[in-house]
Length: 115
Length: 115
DNA sequence: AAGCGATATGTTTGTGTTGACACAACCTTT
DNA sequence: AAAGGTTGTGTCAACACAAACATATCGCTT
Image (cartoon, rainbow over all chains, first blue to last red; front, side):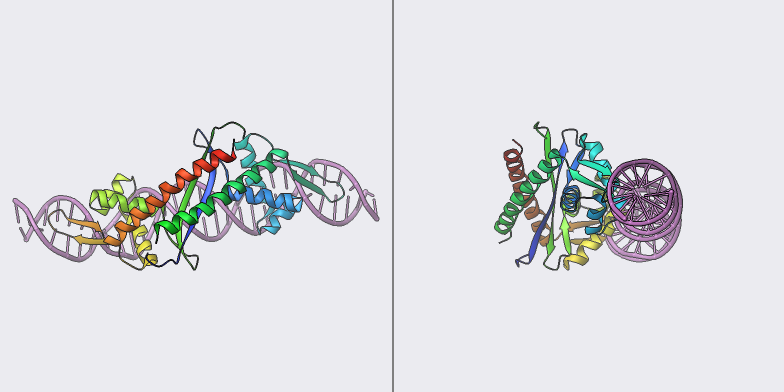
C-alpha cells in the first residue's frame, strides 16, 4: 500500500438512462480494427478472435444502439468488405478521447491519494 | 449520441506492477459490509450472497494482497465475528476516495466531450 | 453437556459466456 | 461455371464463475 508500485486500471462504458449498456472498450476496439483492416474477418484475425464471435458482438451493439455501425458488402473482388458508418467513426473517436482524458486524470488522482 | 441521455460508467481496480489484479469495487464492497455488520455471515446476507461465496473471495484477496484483511474469531458469545485490520480500513477508505474523485471528473469530461 | 451462531472448507450443481465447427448466400474474377 | 474470400447464422462443446449443499470446528452461554 505504501510503495508506489500500484497501477490503477479502469474500464469505462456508456449507458443510456435506463441503465442499459451501450458500448465500451471492447466494442470500440473491434470497430477500430474493422476500420483499419476493412473487413470483419481480417479484423477478427488481427485481434486473435474468431469471425463468428466478432460478428455476434457487432450484432449486439447494433441492436442496442439502434443504428447500423457498418456498411457491409458481400461478394465482389475481394470477397466482401465492411466499413464504418460516420456515426460509428464519431463513436470511436469520442470514446477514445474520453478514455484517454480520463486515464490521465486517473493517474494524477491515484498519485495524490496513494502518496 | 447527440442527446445528453448518456451516462458514463466506470469500474476501477488496482494492480501491482506485474499486472496482477489486487482488488476493486467488489472486494471493497465486501469489506465495507463486514465492517458494518461485524461478521462475514451477516455481511454476506446483507449483500444477498452466500457465506461460502464471500469467504472464497476474501481468501483470494488475502492471498493476492499478502496481508490479512480480517481478524476472525470463531465461537464466543455471538458465535464469532470478523473485524477489519487497520490496513483493510485504509484500503477501503482510499479506494472510495479515489473512486468518488474519479467519478466526478468522469462526468465533467464526459459532458465536455458529448456536447 | 447441549445448543447456538459464526468461521472454515470440500463437493456438487447450475448458468452464462466464449470458441470451434459447419454450412449457406453472395459477387467478382478467371 | 468453378473458385475464392467474405458476410450471415445455427449449433454444440468447453470453460469459468456463481450458487447451493453438506459438514466440521470452535467457544461462550445456559
